[in-house]
Amino acid sequence: MQARIKGITEDPYYIASPNLLSRLEWRRAPGGVSKLFPKVPKSEPDSEEEPKLREPAELRFFGVVDDSPVNFYLLPDGGWSPKSRSAFHAQKATAVIQPPDEDEPGADHWPSIAKAALEIMRSKKTPGAGMGYGLGKNGGLKVRHALFQRIEPANDSGSNDENIVGTGKPSTGEDNNSGRGSQSSNVLDDGQLLLANWPTTSPEAKAQLECLISEGKWEANPLAAYDRHGNLIHPTEYGALLRGAFVEVKVHIVHQHIAQSNTNNYYADIQEMRIIMDKPLCSYTPIKKRIREELTRASRKRMRTEH
Image 1 (cartoon, rainbow, N blue to C red):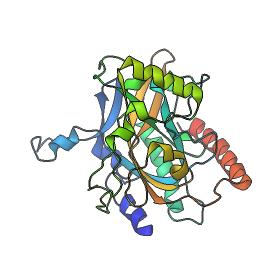
Image 2 (image 1 turned 90 degrees about the vertical axis):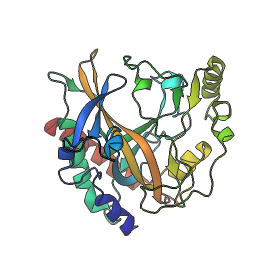
Image 3 (image 1 turned 135 degrees about the horizontal axis):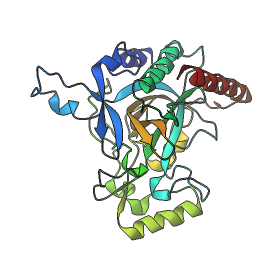
Image 4 (image 1 turned 30 degrees about the vertical axis):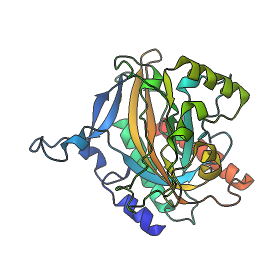
């Protein structure tokens, strides 16, 4: 485990890598948003690396997936209910990645991770706009994933929320970026990931899913999440395997200015999530709940004073 953490922290795209922002730049992206991209070397615009520079940077970090009921929505329907703010097709699966406990590997890196998140937000602001959604939540970093996407390309000039989230498509072949070169031995059949077979967690969500199917304009967008052995996790197992697990996450960082509220908003869109260590048998305790509540209050106060 220490070796995995060391590999992440030494990666040039580790979120707390020294001088990371000097190697990145904000660029406009479809959906009226901006994303962090690698800078294109002016001296070598046609190099072999150039195609990769056209894609947003995948920033890496690690931590524990918060298993508390109010923060864990890495579910195949994102925990959607009729009370949700989003339409069903725009629902996101979300989670908060928390720092490990003080006695766990990697805990000493988290002050740098939290500081790096603040520096990223400071590097891109719309003048005169206030603060909306930030990268931090409850002492950790919030991540999200779009569960559904249009079959036909969306209009780039639009600003609908469903158009601004990275796809994070699962890879079913060899992963050349994980440091392990592992080959998934449990590739899911395409039929399991079709919208018609997509699982939900409530009758209300099931009814909304059936509406999407009848429209014929949407497809499921599985989370690129892998277990400790490199196997793609089936949507029905998101909760069982990811809740409370120690994971590595790769994200695209998004900035969106919402004119209606005149706010700067920041999101971390999951491109890949890999379990480094499975969750403990009992990871959510009253003591941890109190600690996280205290971290939440401290984090909110720090965000208000530093941002």
